[in-house]
Amino acid sequence: MIAPNTYITTTIPYVNARPHIGFALEIVQADVLARFARLRGDRVRLQAGTDDNSLKNVLAAQAAGEDVRKFVDRNAEAFLALGPALSLTVDDVIRTSRDARHRAGVERFWQACAASGDLYRKRYEGLYCTGCEQFYSPAELRAGRCPEHDSEPALVAEENWFFRLSRYAEALREAISGGQLRIEPAGRRNEVLAFIDGGLEDFSASRPAERAGGWGIAVPGDPGQVIYVWFDALCNYVTALGYGNGGDAYQRWWSGDGRRIQLLGKGVLRFHAVYWPAMLLSSGQPLPTDIFVHDYLTAGGRKISKSSGSGADPVALAGQYGADAVRWWLLREVPRVGDADFTVERMIARADGELANGLGNLVNRVIAMIHRYRDGRVPVPATTPVTTPAPVPADGDDLAAACLEARGLIGAALEEFDFRRATAAVWAIADEANRFINRVRPWELARAERGGGGQRLDNVLAALFEACSALGRELAPFLPDAAARITRQCTPRDGRLPQASPVFRRLSR
Ligand SMILES: [Zn+2]
Image (tube, rainbow, N blue to C red; front, top):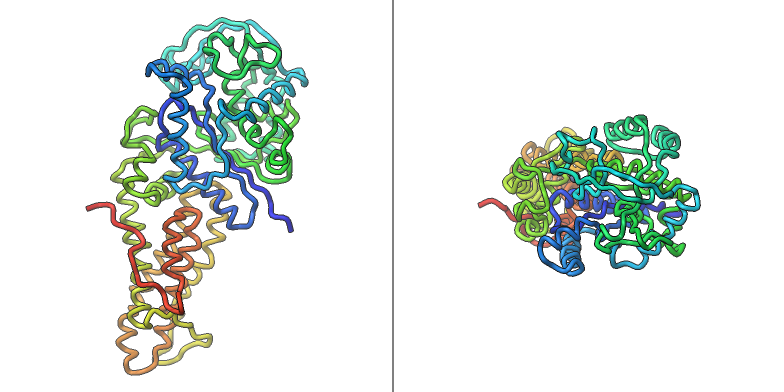
């Protein structure tokens, strides 16, 4: 059987500032899905990128008194630094201003929509928020201000190219309610359907080149206009695959049979679940198969903005506390639905409680006991029930079950993009193993066996060793670094395990 293809994308952030913890959430979630799919045997491509063509970047560079190119390049570097800092397995990064494949793809995309009769020129007047790069109707504003930025939009009047979104309402509704385009969680799917039912208006798909400061991609055949940054940015999911020149990657990852999974935050839902699929239909391409929408993080109770300071800088956090702690907090504490509040104290408490004291301590104890009682050699469990020195009441059955069930539970949870439930299945192994140790008290078995026997201690140690090995395997998509350390602890050399050494360091003093 040919391995199924799984293409996973994150949104491409503006690079008007350094990345924050909210974007780290999305890319860590994507990395977990990619790692799990690879373990399952899928062929996987995890795609990320940066949105360089935004007017926001131009304004931020001007405010900082810097050359736009240098400014964008420096911030884009900071986003790339997330990869090693958080142990991400990103397969490819597209930079929309620098990669020739992007421009070629956007131009081809534009021409395909034009050929479908979906692009036309119209004079337009509207309220525009540069923060959002979006026109707002007066009804969408909150007391006359942008609902995202709480800033007053500018009145803009100009002649632009429009995309005929109105034509696609029925097709979108069908794709979404029929499950061809799956949107999770369900609340977000309903939100999108309600938006479509409210009536879709054509959207402005270009800007005068002058207002964009010459930054961006010119409309093919109309150099006085640049393509709207959202139209441009959304295309990255296929331009990264060489859509512009009909590359093999495009065939494999987008127009073939596989899954096309897109992760995004709730603030850009409409662009990804309405505009983008309509653009794909117009240009004659398949839709994504899955859209997963995460909510927002706050930091210390405050909305995170890219300028909110170093307290929520994921690269700095990973540098100080390690990728494991940052990833574990993001995966264990952030609910599938609803916002979550990040603080360094919560991250440390979670890491020390579950990683250092829970998982780490368990592995350390088990390896140390195998050294103390069996000279570092992993005992072989008895294949027949042991009746001496006393009947054993199903020793370790619950533990073996937790190990066996974990993979299935993790898979089911990740299929619903429920990272908390997935990590709970891993944690259940450690929890069950610690309970097992407290119940059977291996040190008492060791004292008892001096009088002979010892098969029961062999069984107990073998069950615990299997639990540690299972932790190394099942933890791998979530905490790849820690999983590798655990697996190293569980790999004998010349028949003996390495000496026990701490898998996690305690973060609090
Ligand atoms: Zn705004």
